[in-house]
Image (cartoon, rainbow, N blue to C red; front, side):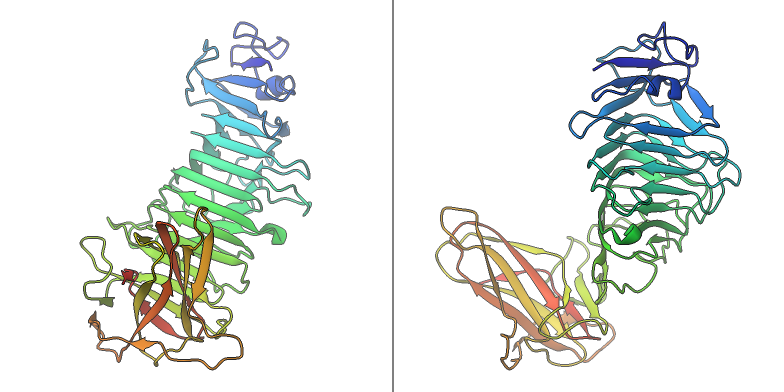
Length: 445
């Protein structure tokens, strides 16, 4: 493991082994930092704008190359100081392969109308982990070409190694409303923001070349988006979760821009809003959607302490009675009972008809084995080849501002826990073209 240095006051003829003998360009220092575990200290005053290819190989999965922007004179151990800039002019891409750990850099390829891209995690083998912390990323260095992209493992060939790209407290700034993140690897973005002034029509496209990606976005500020911007668009397959993110004021966009056709794609928004709420939910899948609802709710039911709410589950024609349905998020309760049966119930209302156990059912996971944390699974779904039966009716009071005809019912499952612990409940709506309101407050008797 060797430390290398790069500074605007250096020379590329230097050995790069100290600040006094620092390299002058990023290409110069990266030609030396070729061993797994090497570290590159970048003078925060460096503004390295090149017209030559920038393709950098990192280290190994558990011994990555580390690149840090620091004050000139900093030695290891030391503090990161944001500021070092890695830029290109023209249609010159910036690519990182291998495992890297990057701190405090500005990385922005392309200018004018050039289709430059920023590429992360694009290799056929081996699998890599790339982390970018406190970095300013994007295509905003004058790059307004609508074909420019930030690629998260989304280039050819299609047989890329499975890798993970992580952004920690990173900002993304784009130069055209048509630019976006192209995602073909697993991706985590924690903290940071979309930076104005250019707000993309869609933030990300997931599932490049059919590669299913797991995407988790937490604590990111999207308030600079257009009020009509979509979070995911033109995507094929992948599981995408947004959690605790800020949305634009008066947002009328969608979690995903069009109806989902592939059952492998599901987009979830948990507690994402422009207002001061902590209950908002919006899930879109191939067979329907689930949203938090504050107009129709059970009296005495779920609430954030101020606002009562329910979950509105609405299927489309892709739901299948008794087989494949729209799945609610996990609803959690706690069991203080051991070795005795308990009944778990959720109240529901439907404005269409009385529902049976092939239309909608409750699935419960509980600790059903003594001495080990092993789950047991129980549901009240209709058995194969059996005749569907109606769920029990209910007399619970519901607030119904639209004065709809409401069929009140109760979904109940009895289990016998063998250990104290959490109970995970999930409602599955299998009846096509049906809307059901669920009170997510579990009743335990």
